[in-house]
Image 1: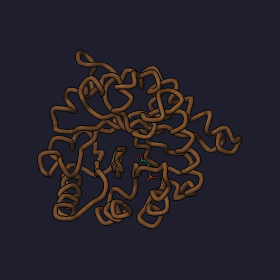
Image 2: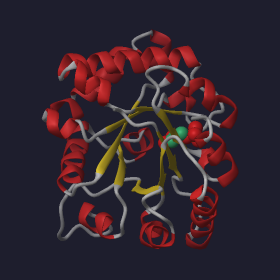
Image 3: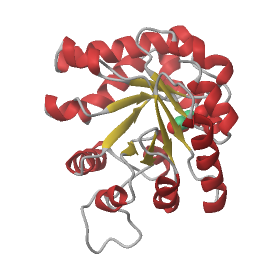
Length: 251
Ligand code: 13P
């Protein structure tokens, strides 16, 4: 059975004290609350160990937002998957459009990062999504499916089954413009069909595909009601416990 997941991506926000305060506030709220999805928070590297130690990681999974494309060694300033794992984090967000665009992450680099993440026993939350010009040209499905073909579709079936996909149209990220419920469902359905074609209908049915891009408490219920939308990757609205819980409550 595929999982419903609400994952926060804090991006480069909150200093350590602020991040710890948010994580413990969330932990306190969710402690005795019945929730119908997995919850993950993606913090900056600096926060991972402190956050993981301060919360119940069985209830709230902790995620990095990136990892090095090398296992270890003389790579000044980089953070390896083993380091991430040693903090108690269980997930790594990979391929976010901001990393592809601002840090020139190519499919080749992402393949190395996905492989290292899986080898470390961590779960990749693998992002894909098209820019506005591609959406306007009407070629978004081919574009996004191709992003997967160049990367995670090269994995063995066994490995692919450990990957969470996040569809994040770039034009909807941080803009306040959400993909409509129909646009999200149409893309998620196309991605599930592509997964079925590349692996099998069974694998496609088991894959969690999250939506990201201006998802908030007021639109989460409608987005998550779609048969192929299995949750969200949340940016801005994950920075306030009340908003994030409002999205979790959409399930
Ligand atoms: P916003 O929710 O702020 O639009 O960001 C989405 C996102 O990029 C999550 O990874």
